[in-house]
Amino acid sequence: MELRRSQTLVSICEAEIERLILDGELGRGARINELALAARLSVSRGPLREACRSLAQAGLLEARVNRGFFVRKLARKEVIDLYDLRAGLMRLAGELVAQRVSDRDLDRLNALVAAMDTAYDGGDTVRFQDLNAEFHAVLVVAADNRRLQQVYNGLAKELRLFRRRGLASGDAMHASNREHRAIVEAIAARDPAAAGAAMEHHILQGKARFVSAAANELDEREEVKK
Image: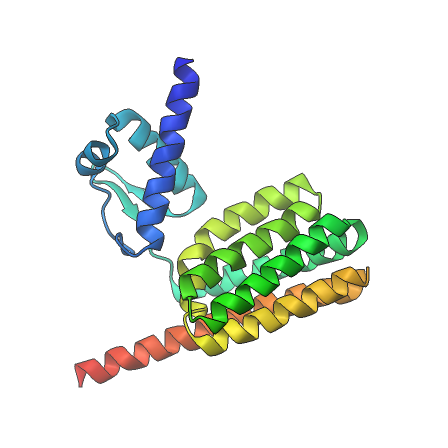
């Protein structure tokens, strides 16, 4: 019972730290204030520190000797490398899903695409991003390959900080969901080659959106300096 309770506390701490990072309350490079966060969550520092270690292994945090844990800062090249790796992985996922997908999975994927259309129409970026993450998670599970899922989950955690930037505009959301629809159509046709190509194209387009958003952000900073 005590072990189970400890594991639950660690999971709660992990989820809260992730939320703080993704909501922007903890920016890239920010230090994790263990005392304040432990008090906020009403836990001891043990589960919190274990959660930080787990998130460091997942790539969201980094440990610095005698200084504690900090939100990880990825260089632009590292993010691009992650996108390229994810593109190859998701091509394989698309091929596998097209061979193994169930009608139930297809119904869920179509429902998520429709929900993302609704989020886009309402200008709800946060809702769209959450549905987008769920869409990709459903695809990976439907591929029915445990090792692929483990590798994907590791990459996804690192990229979550940056994929939000690439989906910040209405045009980006619209383009992304158009690609989602093409993926589902290829899967529904049980065409592994087309599904794999559609998945790879979608991830590479996501990389292009990230690069464009990052460049625009840099341009805005330069304007402020002037």
